[in-house]
Each structure stands twice: as C-alpha cells, then as structure tokens.
Length: 162
Picture 1 (cartoon, rainbow, N blue to C red):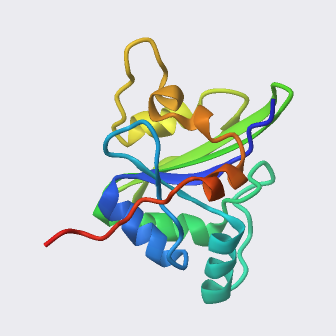
Picture 2: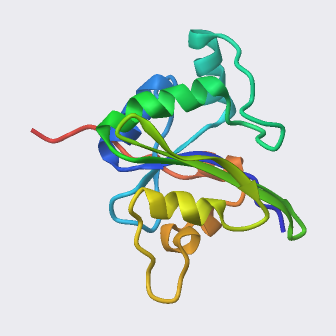
C-alpha cells in the first residue's frame, strides 16, 4: 500500500497561522478533538514559493519540507506547538520524516527513519496515545494515505464565533 503525505499538525491557533502563511491552505480534522492538519499541498507549497522564493530541502530524504517551511513553522509555533509529518511508503517499504517546534524553537530536528519519527514529533507536541494505539493512529493519519485524499475531505472552518 502507498502512504505519501506531507502535513503540519497543530491546534487551532498555530494551524490558522500556518494556513495564512501558506496562502490560506485548507485545514482538516481527523480523529483528535483538538489537533488539525494543514497539508502542504502543491497549491500551498506554490503559495509559499511565490511569496518567499525558492528554498532548499532540509535534506535529500525530505520531498516537501524546505528551509522556508521550517522557518514558517518556527514563527507560527509561538501560537502553539507544531509537528510536521511526511511519509513516503510504497508496498510497505519507505520512510517517514518529522520535525516539531515549540514556542518559536525547534524541539525535534528533522528526522527520517522507516518507523518512529512521526510518533516522536506528535509526542513532542503533547499528543497522548489512545488505549492500544500509537500517536500516528491516535491522530488518524492512516485515514489519509495520499495528498489527494485531502481534496476529497471537507476542510475545517477556522472562523470563530462571536
């Protein structure tokens, strides 16, 4: 099976800041009552490049995370902890990559491994595992195996009620 995604994960305030920084990128909710996903779709990535200019990847194993996206996450993390998760699996073989920021500082440097970095990043930002599940499954990341799945989901509204 394929699993290829790139997304930021955060509570409402930092997710809204990330969304604005990425050209009003869509924000999605999965299983967790507080954490939201801000996928780094082609449109969101292009909006960042158009505003900030091109940027180098943080490493050859990352297919989406750039130095500019790292800086945006750092800046937005003053509103609350942020994790970044990237997967690239096909037929059960591949890697996952992750990073995390808290209070404007890198809390988990960009890390890549066949298993574990995403759980570490989610744990770093405070996600508590549900009974019998790891952080990845507690959040529901298995529900979105490809970036185009986000296009099929209804985005969350970030508008606040008076």
